[in-house]
Length: 129
Image (cartoon, rainbow, N blue to C red; front, top):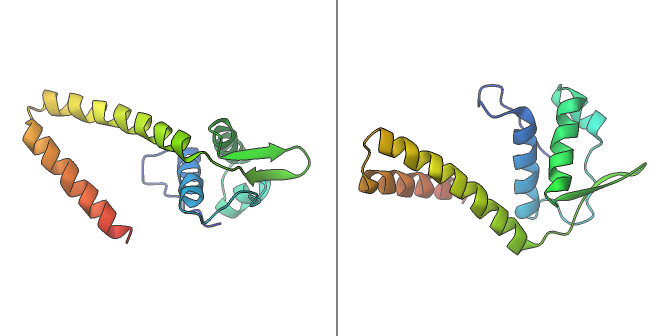
């Protein structure tokens, strides 16, 4: 399992861990039953606090991506793709509301905002291929 942490991204480290593990589950790189590294080992490998890895694992478990078994570790849980999509749609809606608020304040037109979204989507989609 590869996780790359950026101290310059402005995104909290626990969120970076969560997003990368979620992404690996969604793409099938991690599948149901796969064991995740222990919180201690992951913290040591990433040179971060165990509290940070604990937060990431707790959030992943709360969101239904992993399950933790006392004394055995944390494992990828079978995911409901409809539930995952719904969660993603909710998160996207929140981010878009923020973007629209900023566009209105900055007097950015709907057409300009739509064009920016289209360009960003195409750029990101192309880089995933």
